[in-house]
Amino acid sequence: MKDIFENEKEYFLQTYKRTPINISYGKGVYLFTEDGKKYLDFFSGLAVNALGYGNEKVIHAIENQIKKYIHLSNYYVSTPQVELAKKLVQYSGLAKVFFTNSGTEAAEASLKLIRKICGPGKKIITFSNAFHGRTYGSLSLGGKEKYKNYFSPLLENIIQLEFNNVDQLEELIDSNIAAVYLEFIQGEGGVRGVSEDFVMKLKSKKKEFDFIIVADEVQTGIGRTGQPFAYNCFNIEPDLVIVAKAIGGGLPLGALITNEKYSTVFDFGDHGSTFGGNPVACAAGLVVIEEIFENGLLEQVARLGKYFMDQLKIIWESNPEKVVDIRGIGFMIGVEMKYPCSHIIEEFRKKEILVNCTSEKVIRILPPLISTKDEIDHFLTIFRSILN
Ligand code: PLP
Image (cartoon, rainbow, N blue to C red; front, side, top):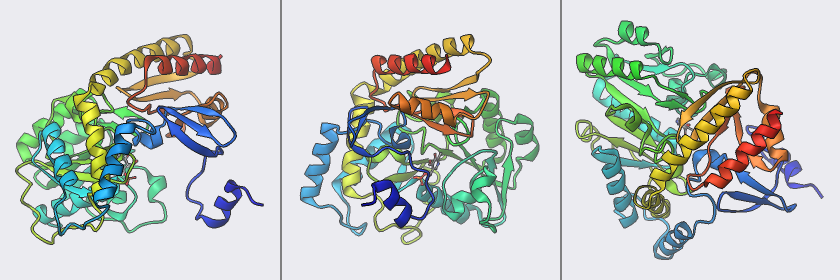
């Protein structure tokens, strides 16, 4: 009989390189495999599982909602949707929400909004190594050629500038710019944060030309940086924010959040989604938001994230020939190595820790937000032993 990996090869389009472990279940920050191994998961389902696995409150909220109704359609309002929208508005400081099922759909919604208000002629600025999703609009915004190969023609009127290049902002932003898309910390791009100077220049240019700033908070959003959103670390107010990943408690959910000014651009029928804002996903998301913002998780991430970074910097100091840089904020951390890091990821896996390699040389560490100092210390001990 074929095993699960052979069946995967037989029945799936081969778009994903799967990690060769067969997971049975998760509990807390750990994943348990069919062959009895226990992995510390510092990948969190790619930044989705903020509360780890098997959180009782999430399970209870899901069970509770499923018994009432699983789906209604957006012809009706639902309590979990409305409650979650209220919280997203409260913690973002923005005005209104449109729910989607994913990050890429939130990006598409934002693109349609921008097109409706600015028309087809104006240009959109994005940055090198940016990642905003895989559907045609969001793919057009992306800055990694390897994702765009084979798929042109993409959307027109998108200009790609160098990330953190202040001079280019000065030179190329004028009255012909409709919007600027920015990840305040690029995830796929190698966990690279935007510089203060860059944000200052963006702010001053916005004052002059009043373009729309879109913060892509799909990976950074909802507490991962120890702030509600990554833009909160940079003293700037975006006009539009897109979120997804963690906000559904593990169920598919995304959102476009707009400020007051852009909250009336869409009229009835301008945009829609059958599943967007699924009530069960919203009920789960509500628990995530409450845990992060109202039960002290945000402060814990800020405090332990700093500890984690400080410890990694000490490791860097004693391994300058192997480690090139330590970057990130809160529980979004990148360790750039001198060489491609896939074999280090493999070594971590042998020691029953799951992390990911991005941009070839960057170990991307995305612990569940519930991770404790002991778990971080365990990671650090293993990292030291791998480097040695
Ligand atoms: N934007 C960012 C910053 C992301 O990291 C991702 C996914 O990794 C997306 C957008 C796309 O989100 P999704 O995969 O939910 O479509």
